[in-house]
Length: 188
Image 1 (cartoon, helix red, strand yellow):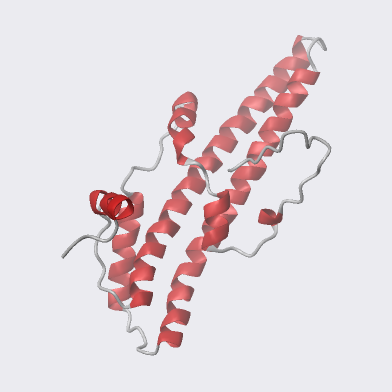
Image 2 (cartoon, one colour):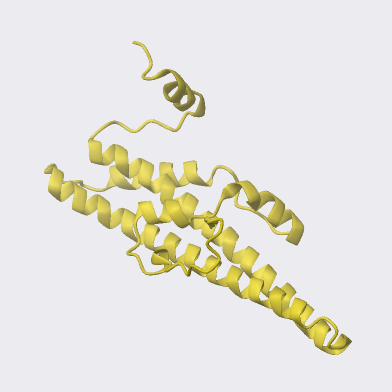
C-alpha cells in the first residue's frame, strides 16, 4: 500500500477515502501492493509469490473469453458488457488490497503492543511475540493475495481495453512498450 508522509503534519488525521471509495481501476492502482518489496517480504517469511507471468496469462485468458463471447457491435452496449466482465475482478482485487491493509495495521498494532509491554515479564512478552508473529505472517499472506488479484485485474483490463477500442489484441512486449515510451510511436 502507498503511504504518504507529510513532514510537520503529525497532528493531522487523514480520512482514508480509499477504504470507502467505489472499486475502480484507478482506486486499485492507488492502493495496490508495491511489487518492489514483495520478494523480500516473501523471502523473510518463507512464502511463495505468484509467478511473473500471471498478468500475461490472465490477459490471454480474457482475450480468449472475449473472443468466445458475442460482443455487441454498438459501442455503448459493448462497453456495458466489457465493464461487466472486468468489474468482478477489480472488486475482488480492491477487497483483497483492503484486507491486506487491515491485516498490516493489526500486525503493526501488535508490534506496538509488544514494545509497550517491554519489562512486563517473559510470559506476557512471549504471548505478544507469538501473536505478533501470527499477525505478521497473516498480513504477508494477504499482501501476496492482493498482489495476485491485482495482477489478474490488470491483465484483464489490458485485454478489455483492446476490445473497447476495437483494436486487434497483441501480447504485451516490454521492449516495444519501452521504445514507445522513450522514443514515441514506432516508425512505419
